[in-house]
Each structure stands twice: as C-alpha cells, then as structure tokens.
Length: 305
Ligand SMILES: [Zn+2]
Image (cartoon, rainbow, N blue to C red):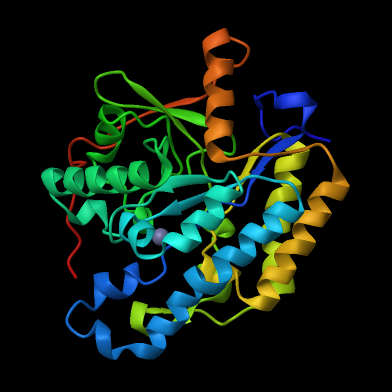
C-alpha cells in the first residue's frame, strides 16, 4: 500500500489509528444564542434541541458503556448548568467533558476581552461539575479567532480540536513560541452536512440515510486505519443520537472493533499521548504557526463587482 501519510505517530499497543466519537453537546444553546428575543415561542425547535440532552446523551453514554469505551463531549458551560442529569450520565461513564464556549458564542465575532470572559465562565462551569478544569477545547461553529490560541495557552489547556490542518495530531504554535496539541478533524466527519435541515439556523441539507452518512464517516476511518491517522468525529447528540442514527453508530463501533487495531480514547488521552511522544523524542509532530496572515496580502489589482 502506498504510504499517504509520511510520518504517522506510533499509537499505543501498536494500534493502527486513534478513534474518538467526539460530540458537541449544544442542545438549546443555539436557540438562545440566535433567538434571544423570542426563544420562548420557538417550542418545536426547542423540543428538537432538548432531545439531545434528555434522550440522546443518556443513550450515547449507554452505548459507550456497553462497548467499554470512554469518549469526549464538548459542552457549552450553560448546557452543563442547565442539564446536570445528562452531564452526570457522562461523568458516570468516565467520559471527558471538553470546553465548548458558554452559550455557543462564535469567538471570531467577539472582542478579545469578551472571548476571554466566555472562556473563563465555561472553565468555571466545567470545574464545578467535574472538580477540575478542562484540558480540551473545541471552538463553537469552528469560529477560531486570532486570540483563541493565546487564550487557551494562558488558561492551561493541553489541546484544541477545532482545526483541520493535518491527518495526524500536530502542534499549533503561537507568536510567543508556546505550543498546543491540535487534534484535527474535517467537515466530512461532521454530522450536520449529513442530517441537519433546520431553516432557523440557515442550514438546509438534504437528509441522508444513516447508511449513507456512515459510508462517509467509515471511509475516513478506513483511511485513518490504513495510514495511521486520528479519527475524531464532530457529532451532535440531538442529530446523531436520534434513534436510527444511534443504531448506525452502534454498527460503526462494531465494525471498528471487529477490524481491530483501533485505539478508542478520549481526546485528552490522545493529546497526552502526543505530548509524551514529543517530549521523549519518540515522534516529532508537525508544527503550524499562527497567525497565518498577520497582515492583509497586497492585491495587485482590485476586480470590480
Ligand atoms: Zn457546537
């Protein structure tokens, strides 16, 4: 087989790839962020989003328990405080709670101070629920700002899972030379393009069958397994926790376990493994430096509209 990844990391116990069914537990944060004036009247939308907290998260936790795996959910701080029973179901299973903003704010639409305030409030919510601060972050809506990396480094985070710059874990380096583990993913591993048709959020995709969606997700898994990558899903309880889709997730877990050589882990465990490899010199992760474009690129000509 032709090698498509030149320098894959060694995974624990000789595993071929690392897998995390990482979810973003957004629930009604999206409703209150986008419709603060009339959220009380949007009952249908609300019920669909609440399904994530009420039905899907306990279901997903039960699936993970059945298969003996511990995974990661990124949870906005407001969701942690609003849905304690769902968070408790995750903690009982030993799953990781990662940071996902306060009310799912988009950091690149905020000032640095506001982004920091949201980050600190989310940290406090996680600390109150779990007894310790989060180690990982996934940016709401992928809206990573020019300040996000510095704020994560200043607040003790060990990894980020918002970017898509490689097939294997890598390091993102800030202007001061400090580095953070990046656990990359891609839109092909997001469940919104497969399943979500919600005009309230400006998102209208033709809804795919679970079999079709799993075909997309499984192709990425098979490639990660073949070439030594990391497979980190960007799924959502209210989307992928619906009955037929949850059943398809069960089939995918069984497919992975039957294939063998898969390291199921929380993203925090994967980041710690990468840190250990880098520290010992056993593997040298790729490095990408931020910011990419500190100044606008000069344009030779300006096209008219
Ligand atoms: Zn989200």
